[in-house]
Image (tube, each protein chain N blue to C red):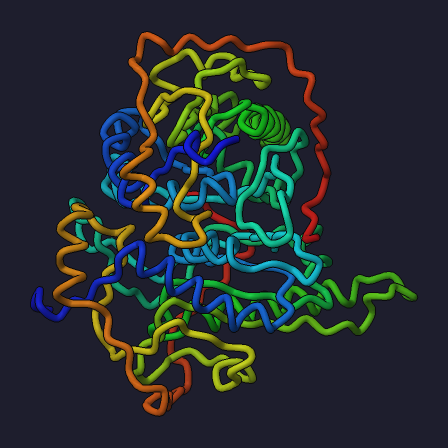
Length: 235
Length: 235
């Protein structure tokens, strides 16, 4: 892909996008943020500064580690999309999952590209919550309490999506992208080797928001290999 | 504390500090990063762009959630130091801990203030690794393999530390602060309500690095209440 087809977001752009988005997200009654690492760490931490629970307290962040990316080259800091989801970290099924029951959970990632990672995260968390529900002692006030998953990304690329988010992707109260853009190569500041160069390139080639009415996404049946490993792997 | 005693780091400052620090950290043979959330998420993700394993592959990040902070006010994004460490998320003891055995682990946080959170993280991880060692099947090649914990922070404040990091804090191959500074109020960009104002204030009141020879830290006996909860709490 030629250099001039890359589009750049600065850190301050990302900060502003999180701030603006929090105005909408604060209407959703979110009580837990789950950051998909590594890309979701930075937007999730910034979002936390602008989101509060109804009682004014901070919303806790839990992290999961998923990777759909493979190394481009040994000496490059850039990454290219892969086709497999691998678990690097997961929530502790025994102790964390019960805390998800009945909650409004916001899953945060940097970009919704093929949607494969997001589908994996939502489906696997839904499965685990179902198990946690079954393990509740009879008479528990949490019995039958629904967990609602919501999604926030900095950028959603308009393209045919391999992954699906049924009940979420087309619901403006469950899915929020700070910017809807074309199927372009996005460069995030945390991947920049030279941050000053990056900022200059961002002035020339910012990420262009498409009008909301173009946001018609075709979800095609998933053909992606999803490797659901029962335990996190460190390397 | 009067407004003019606050000192500011911009996102680009943090990016540069991670890049510079990676030159040193890349000599340590690190094969796992543990980010202390929320403050460690952002430096950990940036560091990952500049750190590679010896084979050129990315270094995985796992996150733990610890909180030593309490809410300042309902309508403020700022936080003030507290005196209790609370676990919001921990590694999955059954599956993650075995992956720590024999590794060079880099624990990442934004600031080393009272050192209480860092002490908690190191001690608790050391305990868990010891348990994982004991559970290894006899004949495992990991038997007896040492796990070495290292610490990276963006800023270390010169002050009397309540927490201790024996074998780490005074070892320049185990502890690295990108900047050693005075006991000042540090404002990170991810806590900024208005990021443009923040950047202007950073020009007027940057975080001043103290000469290395001033870095004589007195560690006093810990009197901090450490609440080690067995399971993560969501709210």
